[in-house]
Image (tube, rainbow, N blue to C red; front, side):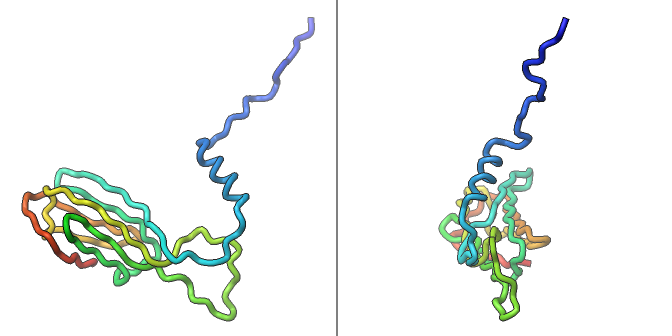
Amino acid sequence: MATLLYNNRPALRPSRAFNAVLNDMLRDTLPAVNQLSSTFAPAADVLETEAGFELHLSLPGVAKDAVNIDFQDGQLVVSGERKAPEATENAPKYHRTETDYGNFTRSFRLPDTVDITAISAELTDGILRVQLPFDSKKVTKYHIEVR
């Protein structure tokens, strides 16, 4: 007796999430961008530890002196600039740019439990780590130095 195979192919399932597949498909249909961006919003992660909160901002290629961190009216404001590569006569021509350059600003409302005067910040390996320790003091304005 002969065996009939109705579907001898393995099931074709995407190995990535649907959103990733859709993003790739749509990105490939967009026209190539040959101008660098002038603003961007860096990705941020907020973590809570026993000592307080930690804010991690992804800032690859941003110098320490190009970052400003201020606290005013209950909000922590992180701003700065990622400088674009210098345009020279022998510079390569961009066919596609996915890296964002220019000015950025991110604001975060802080709870009253954060000790504003004990906030510290460090920029290493392209990640800005801002430590926000717990306390019950209230301060309305303070500038944080980036180490």
